[in-house]
Each structure stands twice: as structure tokens, then as C-alpha cells.
Amino acid sequence: YKKVLDIQLKALGSNHARTATSYNNMAVVLRKQGKLEEAMSIYKKVLDIQLKALGSNHARTATSYNNMAVVLRKQGKLEEAMSIYKKVLDI
Image 1 (spheres, helix red, strand yellow):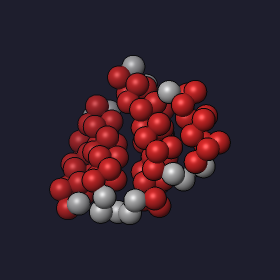
Image 2 (tube, one colour):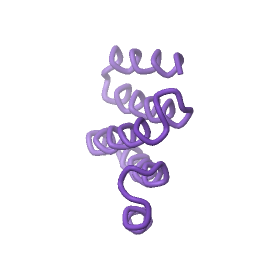
Image 3 (cartoon, helix red, strand yellow):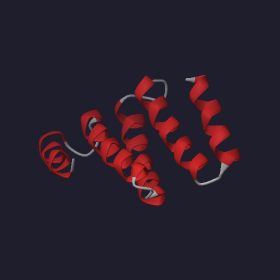
Image 4 (cartoon, helix red, strand yellow):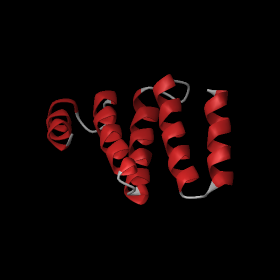
């Protein structure tokens, strides 16, 4: 994923939706490895890119919020996770 991300950063720039997808793929791997803080940091970057590139009501933006809520749930931050899950439902 890192190699693909490097190529996309050069070709598309840091604020492109496809670049966000590569970051997201890296975050998924980190989450599955139990590296939740690292995953959350990248998910926040993904969300920032998607908000700029796709807007706040796009399905992929909702997926980013959902991924962040999953991390929060795994960290035991259930109230924060529930708040984000509710935001996803509004999208």
C-alpha cells in the first residue's frame, strides 16, 4: 500500500479521493494489527481529504466516519463511537 500511496501522491496530489483510498487501506491494515492509535490518525487524514474532495454527504465520507467509530469502539470509547455512528446515519 505504501508504494501505491507514493505513486498516487506524486500523480494525483495529497487531496485526491484516490489518495484517500490508499491511506484508508493502510489504516485498515493497522487496525487489524491492533495499532489503533496509528489507524485513527490515518483515518482522520482520510476523512479530511474526503471532506475536501467529495463533500460531507458522500457515501465514502460516511464510510470514513464509520471506520473511525470502529476504532473508538475497539478502544472502549463507546459514547464517542455512538456519536459518530449517529452521524453516519444522517449521511
